[in-house]
Length: 81
Image 1 (tube, rainbow, N blue to C red):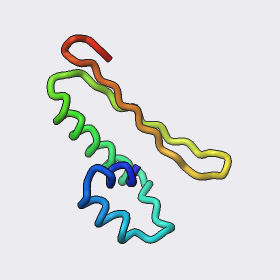
Image 2 (image 1 turned 45 degrees about the horizontal axis):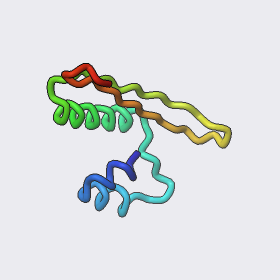
Image 3 (image 1 turned 90 degrees about the horizontal axis):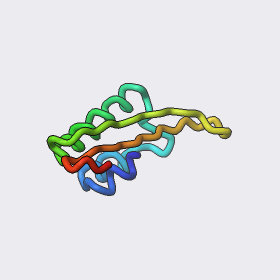
Image 4 (image 1 turned 45 degrees about the vertical axis):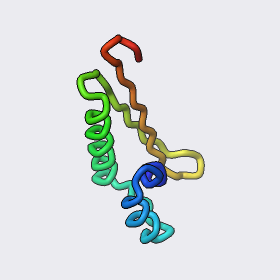
């Protein structure tokens, strides 16, 4: 998720990816909520009056790594999903 955000924003790439230690995951609940708030504010800014929802799910895979999935859907003024 951080790599995706960094690919769109050079400042995030400089601060987060270059300076973070290898074992640093940034997946605490507080960080996850902050990522979700940033994402929702960006979505609101771009789709303005359209309806949207963001679904977040977290799961642990077989290798015991926790993974967070984000799904974003919106309906535009014409009613298209």
